[in-house]
Length: 421
Ligand SMILES: Cc1cc2nc3c(=O)[nH]c(=O)nc-3n(C[C@H](O)[C@H](O)[C@H](O)COP(=O)(O)OP(=O)(O)OC[C@H]3O[C@@H](n4cnc5c(N)ncnc54)[C@H](O)[C@@H]3O)c2cc1C
Image 1 (cartoon, rainbow, N blue to C red):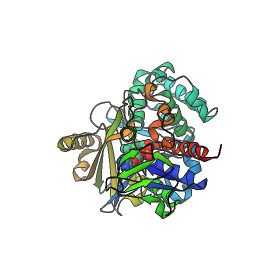
Image 2: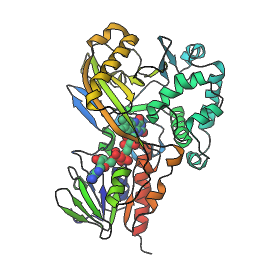
Image 3: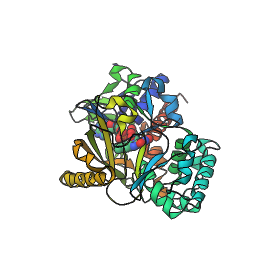
Image 4: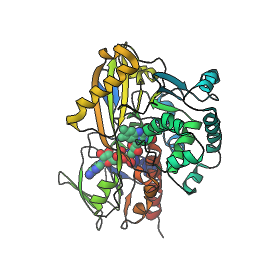
């Protein structure tokens, strides 16, 4: 490859999206990725015929940026049933949007998960959340999600039984301190689309974006050691150097601020521990998210991905995914796993004894915190030296959608900076 105009540090979804938009604008780039493959926080491992995402993740089919950037058909998306199975008072209760599944209207209306008033408030919120332009979400005054749910009048019991585990699985925190901007986005997306996964695992998403770039535009196993913003030169851990007229740092905020030697007010990240088990039989028969509405025990949410995409497990086997909030140190993994299995046994009985453990992923930096004080990180994106840009999910909604939006915005700003004045 002749010298690229832009060097992008990081081959996660934001860096790849940025490269793809630059490519469409006729600007050449080289993505330098430290890991052995692109994808960043979206990777899939293939273990004994099972496809294991590194941490349970879903794509929301209504994400507007994803709809523009990705070829959904080629991803062969498989959808979860809308709603959830909520574990409460020793039973699983389906809690489904009756507008989407009219056949489940009566079971949902009778469900003890929510009061009748909560169900009406939910329907009202759903209708309101889909009105107006999506951009409006970002100009509304923000507060915490918990405050919003309370001000909408939802009962404490419903917040505890449904919103905490449901949004906890999305925000990776159950105090619901996350900004209403993220809540509004997520609620609107769940209300207007489906929770989907590509055939073969979530890594198909970054792979598809990467496949739209020239093969020489991506270098893996290329860890950047230092950046010189004065000359737009980057040096790899191997000692190799690259210079370009523009640099994009598409790594996490911690890595970007360290490489640029910029003080960034530290924001926390939310971690998660995801356990995968194989079983001869599926513990439930519906491809739905399963939520812990009881509020005790380590499990926040779980699912049986093989009911959604049978190809993610060998024939005759089921894949079970269980998420516990917070990362786990190696030395505590076995203890937590035993607690998870013991809780699963109270839920599904002795059949849990024949589950075999496949893998555990403990991910300390899964999502950058997005409470109101940290929602807008764009100032960091706007205060770089000439020719140096940052992008990443932390600048937007801390989601796949946010990573893609950030990649596009950065590419647009960069292309603008190249235009003759
Ligand atoms: C367990 C989990 C569950 C999630 N669930 C969902 C979900 O259900 N829905 C949703 O929309 N989003 C979800 N997300 C969030 C989503 O995956 C991220 O928002 C998105 O992948 C972030 O992309 P990014 O490019 O901003 O960052 P990253 O993916 O972190 O990419 C940064 C890249 O930079 C590379 N890098 C770092 N340092 C260097 C260096 N020095 N040199 C070269 N390369 C470097 C890294 O290896 C990485 O590839 C989840 C994330 C996790 C981990």
